[in-house]
Length: 192
Image 1 (cartoon, rainbow, N blue to C red):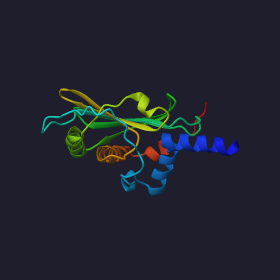
Image 2 (tube, rainbow, N blue to C red):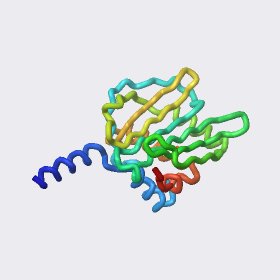
Image 3 (cartoon, rainbow, N blue to C red):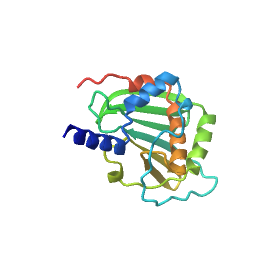
Image 4 (cartoon, one colour):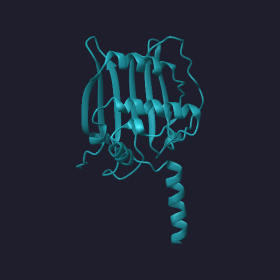
């Protein structure tokens, strides 16, 4: 009976990705940078492929990256939202870290106009696909919203087993680098 229970739990953990944001925080802290993380970490894409086509030479006007952590106990669960918004004076990067919706840490910093110009161009060039929420239930999942002049394009993915998901994960790692203190924010203790 124990063996059967173990097999079921192992199968469920394998299916959901079992990588938590706490694991990601430890990885970021150990390396000191999201840049050194491999773009081929296991994040599986499950999408209903409805690709959005973006006209050439278009740039993004805003970015929002959301990592919804896997279903884990609150003391280990860390989700975050990073938004990059240009204003007339500067480009602002806001991040909030939450535990099942309760914000436990937040931060704000600015990035250079040159960094934003490159991100804006690269974000608009991404191949974004729409995905349904039920395809990622229980697993860690990224959602990237790219605001363009003609609307918002969204991609949701859980693992990078396809070339497009790998490109999206690489881009997400670059967005994470814009937050100066992300490892410390993810390590914030949770107090119920």
